[in-house]
Image (cartoon, rainbow, N blue to C red; front, side, top):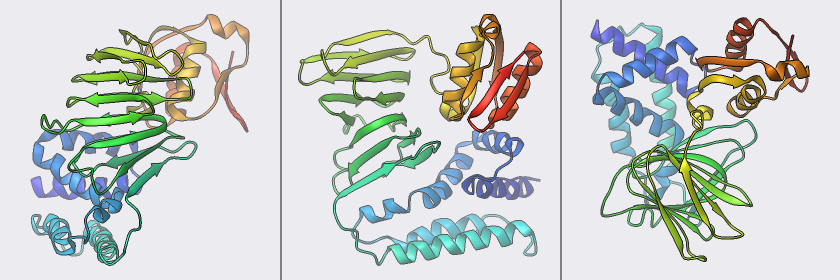
Length: 323
């Protein structure tokens, strides 16, 4: 039974890496990853190959043999029927990954800066060389020096929004540059937003130090709290983070408690990168209490419209909620 479960899990990982996983299988994959540390390690290793071949360029030569051993061991550790469709699919994927590793190992990468950028409606998951992860929201960009990152963990949030999950290393703190504003992470997870006016940080776990080098101001931010730094004044303001949905653009989890429908529509737009508006002013007085977590907007809207006994119409510009 365990071998069968692992075989299924490998198929789910493949589908997720291909952005083709069904919502039900995504939930099963998440449950499988949470079963034990070994499952999570397996998932991370394969994700690392798919999403971060660029990291192979951080060293002068890619370790082709070791990378292939990591990949091939996943098949060797599991006794699966040679004729199963999953084996064929998995073997094909491994072959492609190994070929890419082989090619990359002979490429010369000019320059020392790696930059990751997202387009409109695109979210990107990035694994950094130390294993820390970054989720980039749409229209965002980060960059770091590939030659010095391992010895001095630091990157620049050029613009936009990102969620960081940082591996703790007390001897080598993780520092984010946002202009004259520095975010010093002490091993935690947090959401960071940079625009022309300010930088906002909301801490999910751990501890974050934020400072403005120009104004000589700094603050410590703890879990459940947020800080806003103005570029114009240099002032740092801190407060409790009352937005339960600040991570919804990543995990698609939305919590509404007697929330006005206008705010619901705005949060849906931010979460799914689709425009959701109210057709009539009377709907602004309606309120929603619900907890939702759906990969696609259509499923979320189906629950909302059923709960409130309203209708939804899709047009060329987005979604309209109507009486």
